Length: 397
Image 1 (tube, rainbow, N blue to C red):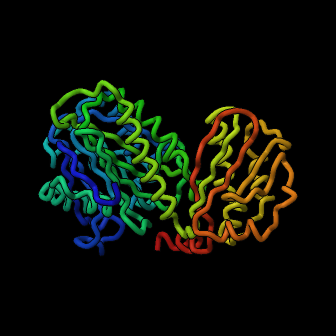
Image 2: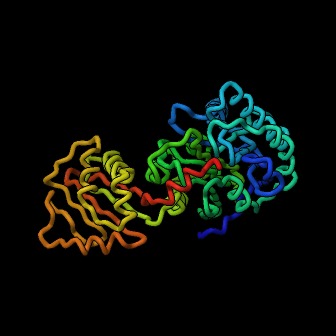
Image 3: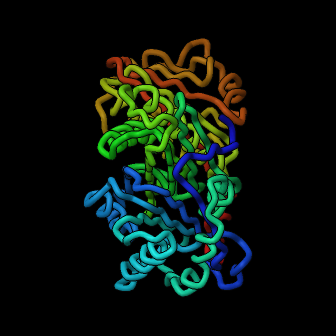
């Protein structure tokens, strides 16, 4: 439904400019976001598998484990990840939860939090203490765009989207441009709905949607310490009629997650190409996705994309490094409609100029068929350019 986010009954959002990355930003760039639910929300979440996961990740996961049926708020900041900060990390994360709880008027156990930004830098909790009241003072249902801006780091645009499922609404936002190779969900993403879905169903549907969206993208192959995705339901949909059939909601959730995930790739640091990798003929969907992600993350493949170089040798090299069983003589490779390889051999009619023409496009698709079964999956990625190095070399400056 485009980039105009729909309001979701039961949820209000507020923002503040705390100067989290630098004190000079106080009152300027918004960097703190609060989602408040007017009723106890059911919630689900998925979190990074990085061994150095931030304290806010552990606290959110624990809260959802203990009681996912009475969540009242989500607070998130950009500019500082509060990760790798030693013994103060957890107390700082807990203090942010308490600030949100005090602002909304609930218990700390009913609040989830997320942080994103520089790793290993002391967390400016004092500046959040001074500014968090502003989030509570400006809570309204239509602040999705300001909230999406408040969680951005190197993002160049706000990432939001909505879906309607009958009388119900689903709206979400996410952030991410670098350190993108999710192994659970992604960077930061927050989705809300008024559809009356219990927490256990939300968790099942979220996991399914994440597998085919956020876990199917890669910008640079790095999984963050703070990756978090949360899905909350107020249950306040028109008519208050419980859903008997979850299929329509599941399809809408997957569609929205794919839209948001693709926006992350399109906004990838230094990315100039948007590449779809469609794998078919695998033994199962998991192996198809594994192979697609292996090709997507290869620096040699990604630099070939950047140079508009149809270097198919790099693609089959990456495929061969994938930890699944392949039969090289059965592999087919196409770039858009140009057949490059068939039965594991360079096609006799293929000409390099044809492949180069496809790779020169800003968007194209690699079709890979393994000839082993009926499993298929789609992965989205971009190229690796000089700009990526520049952006990340100067990230802390």
